[in-house]
Amino acid sequence: MPSLDLDDILTELGHFGTFQKRNYLLICLVIAFSVLPLGYVFTTRSSKYRCFIEECDGDTASAYEQDWLQDAIPLKETELSRCERFAPGNASDSACSNFDRGNAITCDRFIFENGDLTIERDFNVTCDENLWMLTIVGSINNIGELVCLPLSGYISDKYGRRSMMVISALLSTFCGLMKSFSWNYITYVVMEFLDTSLGSGTYTAAYILAIEIVVPEQRVLGNTLVACAFALGEALLGAVAWMSPSWRWMMRFLYTPGVLITLYFWCVPESVRWLLSKGRWEEGRDVLRKVAKANGTRIPDETLQQLGIRKDDPEDEEKQGESIRSALRSPVLLFRLINCSFAWCCCTFVYYGLTMHSVSISGNLYSNFIAVAFIEMPAYLVSYCTLDKIGRKSSLAGSLMASGAACTAFIFIPEANAVCKLIAFLFGKFSITIAYTTLYIYTTEMFPTNLRHSLLAVCSMFGRLGSMVAPQIPLLARISPTLPLIMFGVMASASGLLSLLFPETLNTKLPDTISEAVHIQKE
Image (cartoon, rainbow, N blue to C red; front, side, top):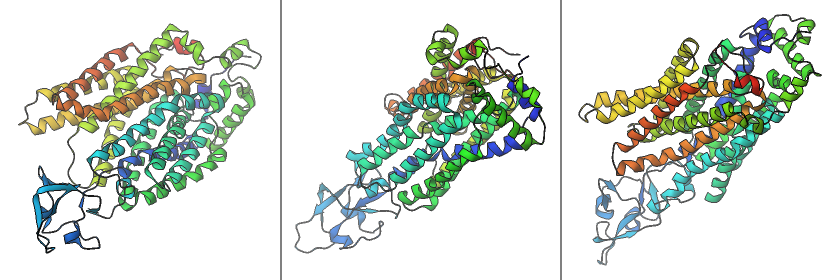
Protein backbone atom coordinates (compact mmCIF):
# COMPACT_ATOMS: atom_id res chain seq x y z
CA MET A 1 0.00 0.00 0.00
CA PRO A 2 1.58 3.38 -0.95
CA SER A 3 2.21 5.84 1.89
CA LEU A 4 0.67 9.30 2.02
CA ASP A 5 2.35 12.34 3.54
CA LEU A 6 0.65 14.11 6.49
CA ASP A 7 0.97 17.52 4.84
CA ASP A 8 -1.00 16.19 1.85
CA ILE A 9 -3.85 15.15 4.14
CA LEU A 10 -3.79 18.45 6.07
CA THR A 11 -4.04 20.29 2.76
CA GLU A 12 -7.00 18.11 1.82
CA LEU A 13 -8.68 18.87 5.15
CA GLY A 14 -8.39 22.65 4.78
CA HIS A 15 -5.37 24.92 5.08
CA PHE A 16 -6.57 27.01 8.01
CA GLY A 17 -10.08 25.90 8.75
CA THR A 18 -12.26 25.96 11.86
CA PHE A 19 -10.14 23.33 13.62
CA GLN A 20 -6.91 25.28 13.17
CA LYS A 21 -8.52 28.59 14.12
CA ARG A 22 -10.04 27.17 17.31
CA ASN A 23 -6.81 25.49 18.36
CA TYR A 24 -4.72 28.55 17.57
CA LEU A 25 -7.01 30.67 19.73
CA LEU A 26 -6.56 28.28 22.66
CA ILE A 27 -2.81 27.92 22.11
CA CYS A 28 -2.34 31.70 21.81
CA LEU A 29 -3.99 32.09 25.23
CA VAL A 30 -1.27 29.81 26.64
CA ILE A 31 1.39 31.79 24.75
CA ALA A 32 0.10 34.99 26.37
CA PHE A 33 0.11 33.23 29.76
CA SER A 34 3.77 32.23 29.29
CA VAL A 35 4.71 35.94 29.53
CA LEU A 36 3.87 36.08 33.24
CA PRO A 37 7.37 35.21 34.59
CA LEU A 38 8.40 38.61 33.18
CA GLY A 39 6.41 40.10 36.05
CA TYR A 40 9.68 40.53 37.95
CA VAL A 41 10.15 43.73 35.92
CA PHE A 42 7.44 45.27 38.10
CA THR A 43 7.82 43.35 41.36
CA THR A 44 11.54 44.21 41.68
CA ARG A 45 11.48 47.77 40.43
CA SER A 46 13.16 50.34 42.64
CA SER A 47 10.89 53.02 44.05
CA LYS A 48 11.57 56.58 45.12
CA TYR A 49 11.92 57.00 48.87
CA ARG A 50 13.70 59.02 51.55
CA CYS A 51 14.65 58.73 55.20
CA PHE A 52 11.98 59.09 57.86
CA ILE A 53 12.93 62.23 59.81
CA GLU A 54 11.62 61.84 63.35
CA GLU A 55 12.10 65.51 64.20
CA CYS A 56 9.92 66.61 61.27
CA ASP A 57 7.69 63.73 60.21
CA GLY A 58 6.43 63.01 63.72
CA ASP A 59 5.34 59.61 64.97
CA THR A 60 3.34 58.76 61.85
CA ALA A 61 4.42 58.67 58.23
CA SER A 62 3.85 61.91 56.34
CA ALA A 63 3.94 62.85 52.68
CA TYR A 64 7.12 62.32 50.68
CA GLU A 65 7.44 65.93 49.52
CA GLN A 66 8.18 68.47 52.27
CA ASP A 67 9.53 72.02 52.27
CA TRP A 68 12.29 71.17 54.76
CA LEU A 69 13.80 68.18 52.93
CA GLN A 70 16.95 69.96 51.72
CA ASP A 71 17.72 71.00 55.29
CA ALA A 72 17.43 67.43 56.61
CA ILE A 73 18.68 65.22 53.74
CA PRO A 74 21.94 65.59 51.74
CA LEU A 75 21.94 65.79 47.96
CA LYS A 76 23.60 63.17 45.74
CA GLU A 77 24.21 64.91 42.42
CA THR A 78 20.73 66.36 41.79
CA GLU A 79 18.67 63.85 43.82
CA LEU A 80 17.99 63.62 47.53
CA SER A 81 19.87 60.77 49.19
CA ARG A 82 17.58 57.80 49.76
CA CYS A 83 19.37 56.32 52.78
CA GLU A 84 21.18 59.19 54.47
CA ARG A 85 20.07 62.15 56.55
CA PHE A 86 21.81 64.91 58.51
CA ALA A 87 22.38 64.18 62.18
CA PRO A 88 20.27 66.16 64.68
CA GLY A 89 21.79 69.44 65.83
CA ASN A 90 23.12 70.16 69.32
CA ALA A 91 20.42 72.64 70.23
CA SER A 92 18.08 71.62 73.00
CA ASP A 93 14.95 72.29 71.03
CA SER A 94 13.64 69.89 68.42
CA ALA A 95 13.11 72.41 65.66
CA CYS A 96 12.76 70.81 62.25
CA SER A 97 15.53 73.02 60.84
CA ASN A 98 18.10 72.10 63.49
CA PHE A 99 20.47 69.64 61.75
CA ASP A 100 24.22 69.16 61.67
CA ARG A 101 24.79 69.55 57.93
CA GLY A 102 28.40 68.43 58.25
CA ASN A 103 27.45 64.99 59.62
CA ALA A 104 25.43 62.58 57.43
CA ILE A 105 24.17 59.36 59.03
CA THR A 106 22.33 56.33 57.63
CA CYS A 107 18.72 55.62 58.46
CA ASP A 108 16.57 52.49 58.71
CA ARG A 109 13.07 53.93 58.37
CA PHE A 110 11.77 55.31 55.09
CA ILE A 111 8.90 57.20 53.50
CA PHE A 112 8.00 56.17 49.96
CA GLU A 113 6.77 58.53 47.28
CA ASN A 114 3.67 56.45 46.47
CA GLY A 115 1.73 53.58 47.99
CA ASP A 116 2.77 50.90 45.48
CA LEU A 117 3.99 47.74 47.21
CA THR A 118 7.00 46.03 45.62
CA ILE A 119 9.39 43.49 47.16
CA GLU A 120 11.79 46.37 47.80
CA ARG A 121 9.30 47.87 50.25
CA ASP A 122 7.69 44.62 51.41
CA PHE A 123 10.95 42.89 52.34
CA ASN A 124 12.89 46.09 53.18
CA VAL A 125 15.42 45.58 50.36
CA THR A 126 16.54 49.20 50.43
CA CYS A 127 19.67 51.30 49.88
CA ASP A 128 22.54 50.83 47.43
CA GLU A 129 24.23 48.01 49.35
CA ASN A 130 21.13 45.87 48.81
CA LEU A 131 20.50 46.86 45.20
CA TRP A 132 22.02 43.58 43.98
CA MET A 133 19.17 41.72 45.69
CA LEU A 134 16.76 43.35 43.24
CA THR A 135 18.87 43.05 40.08
CA ILE A 136 19.79 39.42 40.69
CA VAL A 137 16.15 38.35 40.46
CA GLY A 138 16.27 38.84 36.68
CA SER A 139 19.39 36.65 36.44
CA ILE A 140 17.76 33.95 38.59
CA ASN A 141 14.74 34.13 36.30
CA ASN A 142 16.91 33.36 33.27
CA ILE A 143 18.94 30.70 35.10
CA GLY A 144 15.69 28.85 35.84
CA GLU A 145 14.95 28.62 32.13
CA LEU A 146 18.55 27.76 31.31
CA VAL A 147 18.53 24.79 33.69
CA CYS A 148 15.24 23.19 32.65
CA LEU A 149 14.77 23.98 28.96
CA PRO A 150 16.63 20.85 27.76
CA LEU A 151 14.62 18.69 30.19
CA SER A 152 11.33 20.18 29.00
CA GLY A 153 12.34 19.44 25.41
CA TYR A 154 13.08 15.82 26.25
CA ILE A 155 9.74 15.41 28.05
CA SER A 156 7.86 17.01 25.17
CA ASP A 157 9.48 14.75 22.58
CA LYS A 158 8.87 11.66 24.72
CA TYR A 159 5.42 12.29 26.21
CA GLY A 160 3.83 14.83 23.86
CA ARG A 161 3.52 18.55 23.16
CA ARG A 162 0.11 18.96 24.78
CA SER A 163 1.15 17.15 27.96
CA MET A 164 4.27 19.30 28.30
CA MET A 165 2.36 22.52 27.59
CA VAL A 166 -0.42 21.85 30.10
CA ILE A 167 1.72 20.43 32.91
CA SER A 168 4.32 23.17 32.55
CA ALA A 169 1.64 25.90 32.61
CA LEU A 170 -0.02 24.36 35.68
CA LEU A 171 3.30 24.15 37.53
CA SER A 172 3.96 27.79 36.64
CA THR A 173 0.49 28.68 37.95
CA PHE A 174 1.17 26.93 41.26
CA CYS A 175 4.58 28.57 41.70
CA GLY A 176 3.25 32.01 40.72
CA LEU A 177 0.44 31.82 43.27
CA MET A 178 2.80 30.52 45.96
CA LYS A 179 5.17 33.36 45.11
CA SER A 180 2.42 35.85 45.94
CA PHE A 181 2.34 34.45 49.49
CA SER A 182 6.12 34.69 50.05
CA TRP A 183 6.89 35.60 53.65
CA ASN A 184 10.46 36.80 53.04
CA TYR A 185 12.94 37.59 50.30
CA ILE A 186 14.49 34.10 50.20
CA THR A 187 11.09 32.47 49.71
CA TYR A 188 10.34 34.88 46.87
CA VAL A 189 13.63 34.14 45.08
CA VAL A 190 13.16 30.37 45.42
CA MET A 191 9.65 30.56 43.98
CA GLU A 192 10.90 32.84 41.18
CA PHE A 193 13.43 30.18 40.21
CA LEU A 194 10.86 27.38 40.38
CA ASP A 195 8.34 29.41 38.36
CA THR A 196 10.66 29.89 35.40
CA SER A 197 12.33 26.47 35.61
CA LEU A 198 9.17 24.36 35.93
CA GLY A 199 7.25 26.60 33.52
CA SER A 200 10.05 26.89 30.95
CA GLY A 201 8.42 24.40 28.58
CA THR A 202 5.11 26.25 28.28
CA TYR A 203 6.04 28.55 25.41
CA THR A 204 8.15 26.14 23.36
CA ALA A 205 5.66 23.26 23.68
CA ALA A 206 2.76 25.53 22.71
CA TYR A 207 4.75 26.96 19.81
CA ILE A 208 5.65 23.56 18.38
CA LEU A 209 2.08 22.29 18.86
CA ALA A 210 0.86 25.31 16.87
CA ILE A 211 3.37 24.86 14.03
CA GLU A 212 2.79 21.12 13.68
CA ILE A 213 -0.96 21.39 12.96
CA VAL A 214 -0.63 23.52 9.80
CA VAL A 215 0.67 22.86 6.30
CA PRO A 216 4.03 24.36 5.20
CA GLU A 217 2.35 27.31 3.46
CA GLN A 218 0.68 28.35 6.74
CA ARG A 219 3.65 28.07 9.10
CA VAL A 220 4.58 31.74 8.72
CA LEU A 221 1.01 32.75 9.51
CA GLY A 222 1.10 30.50 12.57
CA ASN A 223 4.46 31.94 13.63
CA THR A 224 3.12 35.50 13.31
CA LEU A 225 -0.03 34.73 15.32
CA VAL A 226 2.04 33.21 18.13
CA ALA A 227 4.44 36.18 18.16
CA CYS A 228 1.56 38.67 18.28
CA ALA A 229 -0.05 36.68 21.12
CA PHE A 230 3.19 37.01 23.09
CA ALA A 231 3.27 40.78 22.51
CA LEU A 232 -0.37 41.06 23.61
CA GLY A 233 0.53 39.04 26.72
CA GLU A 234 3.25 41.57 27.52
CA ALA A 235 0.77 44.42 27.09
CA LEU A 236 -1.74 42.63 29.36
CA LEU A 237 0.98 42.13 31.98
CA GLY A 238 1.70 45.86 31.93
CA ALA A 239 -1.99 46.74 32.19
CA VAL A 240 -2.62 44.44 35.18
CA ALA A 241 0.53 45.72 36.91
CA TRP A 242 -0.69 49.27 36.32
CA MET A 243 -4.01 48.52 38.02
CA SER A 244 -2.47 46.58 40.95
CA PRO A 245 -1.01 48.67 43.79
CA SER A 246 0.44 45.53 45.39
CA TRP A 247 2.81 43.04 43.74
CA ARG A 248 1.07 40.23 45.65
CA TRP A 249 -2.35 40.98 44.17
CA MET A 250 -0.80 41.46 40.75
CA MET A 251 0.56 37.89 40.91
CA ARG A 252 -2.81 36.52 42.01
CA PHE A 253 -4.75 38.34 39.28
CA LEU A 254 -2.34 37.11 36.60
CA TYR A 255 -1.80 33.49 37.67
CA THR A 256 -5.23 32.43 38.94
CA PRO A 257 -6.74 31.95 35.42
CA GLY A 258 -3.94 29.43 34.78
CA VAL A 259 -5.93 26.71 36.57
CA LEU A 260 -8.31 26.69 33.58
CA ILE A 261 -5.50 25.29 31.41
CA THR A 262 -6.34 21.91 32.97
CA LEU A 263 -9.28 21.82 30.53
CA TYR A 264 -6.82 21.70 27.63
CA PHE A 265 -6.43 17.95 28.18
CA TRP A 266 -9.94 17.69 26.72
CA CYS A 267 -10.13 20.82 24.51
CA VAL A 268 -6.85 20.62 22.59
CA PRO A 269 -5.79 17.39 20.83
CA GLU A 270 -2.22 16.12 20.88
CA SER A 271 -0.01 16.95 17.90
CA VAL A 272 -0.95 14.51 15.15
CA ARG A 273 2.56 14.75 13.75
CA TRP A 274 4.03 13.70 17.10
CA LEU A 275 1.51 10.84 17.44
CA LEU A 276 2.46 9.47 14.03
CA SER A 277 6.18 9.84 14.75
CA LYS A 278 5.65 7.64 17.81
CA GLY A 279 3.78 4.99 15.83
CA ARG A 280 0.45 5.79 17.53
CA TRP A 281 -1.37 5.52 14.21
CA GLU A 282 -4.93 5.07 15.38
CA GLU A 283 -4.78 8.05 17.76
CA GLY A 284 -3.37 10.15 14.92
CA ARG A 285 -6.17 9.05 12.60
CA ASP A 286 -8.75 9.95 15.26
CA VAL A 287 -7.34 13.47 15.44
CA LEU A 288 -7.49 13.81 11.66
CA ARG A 289 -11.14 12.68 11.72
CA LYS A 290 -11.82 15.49 14.22
CA VAL A 291 -10.07 17.94 11.90
CA ALA A 292 -12.25 16.82 9.00
CA LYS A 293 -15.43 17.12 11.05
CA ALA A 294 -14.57 20.59 12.39
CA ASN A 295 -13.55 21.89 8.94
CA GLY A 296 -16.64 20.45 7.24
CA THR A 297 -14.63 18.13 5.01
CA ARG A 298 -14.50 14.37 4.64
CA ILE A 299 -11.58 12.02 4.47
CA PRO A 300 -12.06 8.34 3.53
CA ASP A 301 -10.68 5.68 5.86
CA GLU A 302 -8.77 4.29 2.86
CA THR A 303 -6.82 7.55 2.67
CA LEU A 304 -6.04 7.46 6.39
CA GLN A 305 -4.72 3.92 6.08
CA GLN A 306 -2.17 5.19 3.53
CA LEU A 307 -0.82 7.73 6.01
CA GLY A 308 2.89 7.43 6.68
CA ILE A 309 4.70 4.14 7.17
CA ARG A 310 3.03 0.98 8.34
CA LYS A 311 3.71 -0.42 11.78
CA ASP A 312 5.70 -3.35 10.49
CA ASP A 313 7.99 -1.21 8.35
CA PRO A 314 11.56 -1.34 9.70
CA GLU A 315 12.05 2.32 8.81
CA ASP A 316 9.34 3.21 11.33
CA GLU A 317 11.20 1.38 14.10
CA GLU A 318 14.36 3.25 13.14
CA LYS A 319 12.51 6.57 13.35
CA GLN A 320 11.15 5.81 16.83
CA GLY A 321 14.60 4.79 18.06
CA GLU A 322 16.30 8.04 17.06
CA SER A 323 17.85 10.05 19.89
CA ILE A 324 19.86 13.24 20.34
CA ARG A 325 23.00 11.10 20.30
CA SER A 326 21.98 9.81 16.87
CA ALA A 327 21.53 13.37 15.64
CA LEU A 328 24.90 14.47 16.99
CA ARG A 329 26.61 11.66 15.10
CA SER A 330 25.59 13.42 11.91
CA PRO A 331 28.19 16.10 11.06
CA VAL A 332 25.53 18.05 9.19
CA LEU A 333 23.09 18.20 12.12
CA LEU A 334 25.88 18.77 14.65
CA PHE A 335 27.16 21.81 12.76
CA ARG A 336 23.59 23.02 12.23
CA LEU A 337 22.89 22.75 15.97
CA ILE A 338 26.08 24.64 16.89
CA ASN A 339 25.39 27.36 14.32
CA CYS A 340 21.77 27.61 15.42
CA SER A 341 22.76 27.87 19.10
CA PHE A 342 25.18 30.68 18.24
CA ALA A 343 22.43 32.48 16.33
CA TRP A 344 20.09 32.18 19.34
CA CYS A 345 22.76 33.50 21.70
CA CYS A 346 23.51 36.48 19.44
CA CYS A 347 19.84 37.23 18.82
CA THR A 348 18.86 37.33 22.49
CA PHE A 349 22.04 39.19 23.40
CA VAL A 350 21.39 41.97 20.90
CA TYR A 351 17.61 42.02 21.44
CA TYR A 352 17.78 42.37 25.23
CA GLY A 353 21.02 44.35 25.11
CA LEU A 354 19.47 47.06 22.94
CA THR A 355 16.57 47.21 25.37
CA MET A 356 18.90 47.62 28.36
CA HIS A 357 21.08 50.16 26.54
CA SER A 358 18.23 52.32 25.31
CA VAL A 359 17.67 55.74 26.81
CA SER A 360 14.90 55.58 29.40
CA ILE A 361 11.62 56.87 28.10
CA SER A 362 10.20 59.58 30.31
CA GLY A 363 6.69 59.23 31.57
CA ASN A 364 4.67 56.43 33.09
CA LEU A 365 6.53 53.15 33.64
CA TYR A 366 3.51 51.01 32.80
CA SER A 367 2.44 52.86 29.65
CA ASN A 368 6.04 52.70 28.42
CA PHE A 369 6.14 48.94 28.94
CA ILE A 370 2.86 48.51 27.06
CA ALA A 371 4.06 50.77 24.23
CA VAL A 372 7.31 48.83 23.83
CA ALA A 373 5.29 45.60 23.61
CA PHE A 374 3.13 47.01 20.82
CA ILE A 375 6.16 48.40 18.96
CA GLU A 376 7.19 44.82 18.15
CA MET A 377 3.95 44.19 16.25
CA PRO A 378 5.06 45.93 12.99
CA ALA A 379 8.22 43.78 12.97
CA TYR A 380 6.08 40.64 13.23
CA LEU A 381 3.90 41.81 10.36
CA VAL A 382 6.95 42.53 8.20
CA SER A 383 8.32 39.07 8.93
CA TYR A 384 4.97 37.60 7.89
CA CYS A 385 5.23 39.38 4.54
CA THR A 386 8.87 38.49 3.88
CA LEU A 387 9.30 34.91 5.13
CA ASP A 388 7.14 33.38 2.41
CA LYS A 389 8.48 35.64 -0.33
CA ILE A 390 12.25 35.75 0.13
CA GLY A 391 12.62 32.66 2.34
CA ARG A 392 13.83 31.91 5.86
CA LYS A 393 17.56 32.12 5.15
CA SER A 394 17.43 35.53 3.46
CA SER A 395 15.05 36.92 6.12
CA LEU A 396 17.26 35.80 9.00
CA ALA A 397 20.59 36.79 7.45
CA GLY A 398 19.23 40.10 6.15
CA SER A 399 17.60 41.16 9.41
CA LEU A 400 20.67 40.22 11.50
CA MET A 401 23.06 42.10 9.23
CA ALA A 402 20.68 45.06 9.04
CA SER A 403 20.61 45.21 12.85
CA GLY A 404 24.39 44.98 12.95
CA ALA A 405 24.72 47.77 10.38
CA ALA A 406 22.28 49.98 12.31
CA CYS A 407 24.21 49.48 15.57
CA THR A 408 27.49 50.29 13.81
CA ALA A 409 26.01 53.36 12.11
CA PHE A 410 24.75 54.59 15.50
CA ILE A 411 28.38 54.93 16.65
CA PHE A 412 29.37 57.26 13.80
CA ILE A 413 26.33 59.56 13.90
CA PRO A 414 27.22 62.84 15.67
CA GLU A 415 25.64 63.43 19.07
CA ALA A 416 24.10 66.65 17.77
CA ASN A 417 22.03 64.66 15.27
CA ALA A 418 19.72 63.11 17.88
CA VAL A 419 16.95 62.26 15.43
CA CYS A 420 19.20 60.19 13.18
CA LYS A 421 20.68 58.38 16.18
CA LEU A 422 17.19 57.53 17.40
CA ILE A 423 16.17 56.26 13.96
CA ALA A 424 19.29 54.08 13.75
CA PHE A 425 18.65 52.66 17.21
CA LEU A 426 14.97 51.89 16.51
CA PHE A 427 15.84 50.31 13.17
CA GLY A 428 18.36 48.08 14.93
CA LYS A 429 15.69 46.98 17.43
CA PHE A 430 13.13 46.55 14.64
CA SER A 431 15.52 44.36 12.61
CA ILE A 432 16.57 42.15 15.53
CA THR A 433 12.89 41.57 16.36
CA ILE A 434 12.37 40.24 12.83
CA ALA A 435 15.42 38.00 13.26
CA TYR A 436 14.13 36.71 16.60
CA THR A 437 10.72 35.66 15.28
CA THR A 438 12.30 34.19 12.12
CA LEU A 439 14.71 32.11 14.19
CA TYR A 440 11.89 30.37 16.03
CA ILE A 441 10.17 29.04 12.91
CA TYR A 442 13.49 28.33 11.19
CA THR A 443 14.74 26.20 14.10
CA THR A 444 11.45 24.28 14.14
CA GLU A 445 11.76 23.44 10.44
CA MET A 446 15.40 22.28 10.46
CA PHE A 447 15.18 19.38 12.93
CA PRO A 448 13.28 16.04 12.93
CA THR A 449 9.93 15.56 14.68
CA ASN A 450 11.17 13.09 17.32
CA LEU A 451 13.88 15.54 18.43
CA ARG A 452 12.35 18.86 17.44
CA HIS A 453 11.53 20.14 20.92
CA SER A 454 14.74 18.77 22.46
CA LEU A 455 16.97 20.50 19.91
CA LEU A 456 14.89 23.69 20.00
CA ALA A 457 15.33 23.64 23.78
CA VAL A 458 19.12 23.31 23.40
CA CYS A 459 19.21 26.33 21.09
CA SER A 460 16.90 28.30 23.37
CA MET A 461 19.12 27.37 26.33
CA PHE A 462 22.08 29.07 24.64
CA GLY A 463 19.74 31.97 23.94
CA ARG A 464 19.25 32.28 27.71
CA LEU A 465 23.00 32.83 28.01
CA GLY A 466 22.65 35.88 25.77
CA SER A 467 19.78 37.29 27.80
CA MET A 468 21.68 36.66 31.06
CA VAL A 469 24.73 38.59 29.84
CA ALA A 470 22.77 41.44 28.24
CA PRO A 471 21.81 43.22 31.52
CA GLN A 472 25.51 43.57 32.37
CA ILE A 473 26.44 45.18 29.04
CA PRO A 474 25.80 48.79 30.19
CA LEU A 475 28.81 48.35 32.49
CA LEU A 476 30.94 48.38 29.33
CA ALA A 477 29.82 51.96 28.71
CA ARG A 478 32.01 52.98 31.68
CA ILE A 479 35.04 51.86 29.65
CA SER A 480 33.82 53.40 26.39
CA PRO A 481 30.34 54.71 25.51
CA THR A 482 30.56 53.08 22.07
CA LEU A 483 31.74 49.63 23.22
CA PRO A 484 28.24 48.12 23.77
CA LEU A 485 27.10 49.16 20.28
CA ILE A 486 30.31 47.76 18.77
CA MET A 487 29.58 44.40 20.41
CA PHE A 488 25.97 44.43 19.23
CA GLY A 489 27.06 45.24 15.68
CA VAL A 490 29.80 42.60 15.56
CA MET A 491 27.70 39.77 17.01
CA ALA A 492 24.63 40.51 14.89
CA SER A 493 26.70 40.74 11.69
CA ALA A 494 28.71 37.59 12.46
CA SER A 495 25.57 35.59 13.16
CA GLY A 496 23.99 36.96 9.98
CA LEU A 497 26.89 35.75 7.86
CA LEU A 498 26.92 32.30 9.49
CA SER A 499 23.16 31.94 9.00
CA LEU A 500 23.81 31.81 5.24
CA LEU A 501 25.08 28.27 5.87
CA PHE A 502 21.63 27.09 6.95
CA PRO A 503 19.49 25.17 4.42
CA GLU A 504 16.45 26.93 3.00
CA THR A 505 13.21 25.45 4.37
CA LEU A 506 10.62 27.53 2.53
CA ASN A 507 7.65 25.32 1.50
CA THR A 508 9.40 22.10 2.58
CA LYS A 509 7.65 19.45 4.67
CA LEU A 510 8.66 19.21 8.31
CA PRO A 511 11.32 16.48 8.53
CA ASP A 512 10.22 13.43 10.52
CA THR A 513 13.56 11.58 10.58
CA ILE A 514 17.24 12.46 10.94
CA SER A 515 17.79 11.48 7.32
CA GLU A 516 15.06 13.84 6.12
CA ALA A 517 16.50 16.67 8.27
CA VAL A 518 20.00 16.12 6.88
CA HIS A 519 18.79 16.23 3.28
CA ILE A 520 16.20 18.97 3.70
CA GLN A 521 16.30 21.43 0.84
CA LYS A 522 14.18 24.00 -0.92
CA GLU A 523 11.53 22.47 -3.13
